[in-house]
Length: 193
Image 1 (cartoon, rainbow, N blue to C red):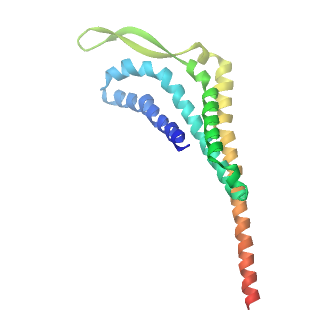
Image 2 (image 1 turned 180 degrees about the vertical axis):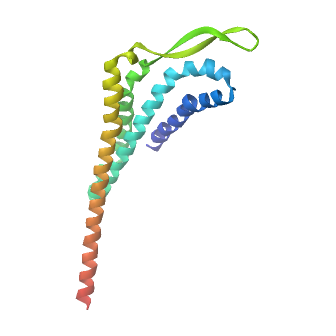
Image 3 (image 1 turned 30 degrees about the vertical axis):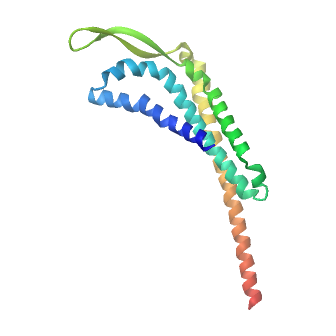
């Protein structure tokens, strides 16, 4: 299970560096023109959906760890039978599958085109690639419902509410245990006196 989780968490920083970090450095320093003009536009249509899928998977793996903690604290007698390696692997596989399925439209948002108008310092023209929005990304309904509302609900509301509710339940259960233990200690002290 840790291998899948680590590989998913490793994909996000690598994609982020390639999508956001290196182009920013290239724009700021004026170096790495080959990467910025040739490699970056070719990689973005593939790295962007992978990074968004990794982000979705990371959010829901965090939520699944919270569910496991909830079961371990609130149903401690059943935790050993409920939280098994097999179920953990199935959960990770399900999260990765659903993250990939939810982000499938992202593969059709960015297209790469070729333009030959860039002139290098020596006066030679060269083919340069650039990214443009695909027709899917231009649809108003797609922007409104998938990019805005669906992303808000799937990536923010569901995970946030799940984390709040489960962590509150864990806190409540721990505080009940603590109160019961304190009552038991005080009753033993009063009996001993």
